[in-house]
Image (cartoon, one colour):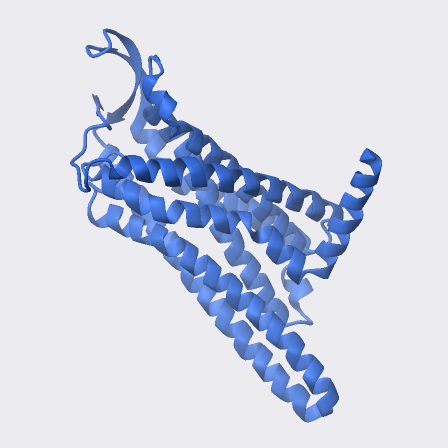
Length: 335
């Protein structure tokens, strides 16, 4: 048995007109700018990591992250288009909002979770590299890295699949437009499915947060311990060089962890709201509250997926070398 839900009906939680301004600024302007830049940046990342080759597990993981971020940002761009005001005046036999839920929004959510776990895996790889430098290549091989990436993509697909079993698109008669329209139809188990999916997302997101924090702590402690040992075994001239290098690594890893945690904190808040109160959802009574929370979290997540190119270029000499060599050649070929 299925029930047609009017997702446009919700209780207003904010002053009139505020949601329209939020939608225009966040989901139209910012979404479009960030996603277009991010798509270009991650496309460059994919080219560079492919040129660097699959011989290193970190390169394979970063390639997987770039592919996931590229897909995420492409879908983000499509979401931004769905918020454009001209859809309100378009004479269509379907709701753009309804259409984007299963075709764009949930796939975007899927790639977001994939990127989370690939980031957590990269941090684990870096952690093992610092803690056990002589064994890391035996522990995390390129083949194992590829297998873990495939596993991440597969498991995350299962975690976001429940909504597809509780909703579908069907044709129905609209008395408002006096014609047949395509509507998003929810079954009686939709609330339960949504609650399960939200709970899984909360758990998985919190686990990645804890994972990132633990890996960062291990890295910082290991680097400081190794720095003290080098101080006892080497002269003060070498000490200054080693300490500077170690400080750069600590700063880089700490910055990655802070960016990850800060950018996804609003997302966790949204998931907690959705888990505690089912009315705070894309289909619930407090849709506007959900929209406002997303107006904070979504641009931050999109920015995080877009700025990795700057981290790679500034922190990796190999990335910088391949980038300059490849794009210099491409530039010469175009002249």
